[in-house]
Image 1 (cartoon, rainbow, N blue to C red):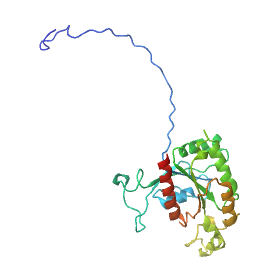
Image 2 (tube, one colour; image 1 turned 135 degrees about the horizontal axis):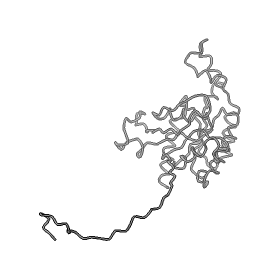
Image 3 (tube, helix red, strand yellow; image 1 turned 90 degrees about the vertical axis):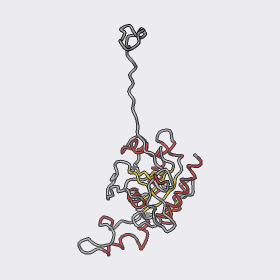
Image 4 (tube, rainbow, N blue to C red; image 1 turned 30 degrees about the vertical axis):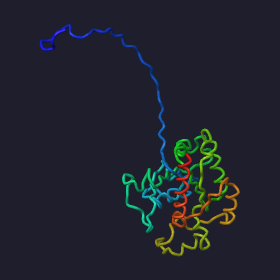
Length: 259
């Protein structure tokens, strides 16, 4: 066989080789789905991006026209310490952040009627909700028909795909309750100067009012809900936001334990 020093042209074992044959070809379609703890769901302009910006360091685009958000935005809420301050930590520290005691929030672009069939890019948005543990359903208190919006969106969730979204745990929160305070938002317009500047509300918010009183809205929502997880807040004014996040954190942890 040869020593391997001088070389040997017959060294080794010759094995028959099969001629190359054509393999199978497949075309794969991969769908990327964002994984988060909580999906923020609501109609356009319900205040989802404002809420995300108020509880996380995310900087979503916020404006007074529908479909301001065209792609999902993520933010991480870190629970405050005993003094009420957010811990300045990362997920690598094991304290706060994704995968530990923090919550990952996904701001899903606004949904409209027919979203389950793809209207308004509904398919592109709803697929991200499937990978979340809990749905935070925001109801706009200043909508022309907040109850109609609530029922419509729940129908779209149920009709999408296998219907899994319709049975996902929900927390319902009525947003923009500052419109109910001090006889409505119009009162704050007095804080503006003649040129529209000042410390009051945004210019476009002048004249923003509610169509349903707070008590009636709460009662109608309770009648339409299959659970009792209902809260009220103003994401812009941060009224009720901390209480919501504390209760939602406990609820999400319970859901994770069951799953």
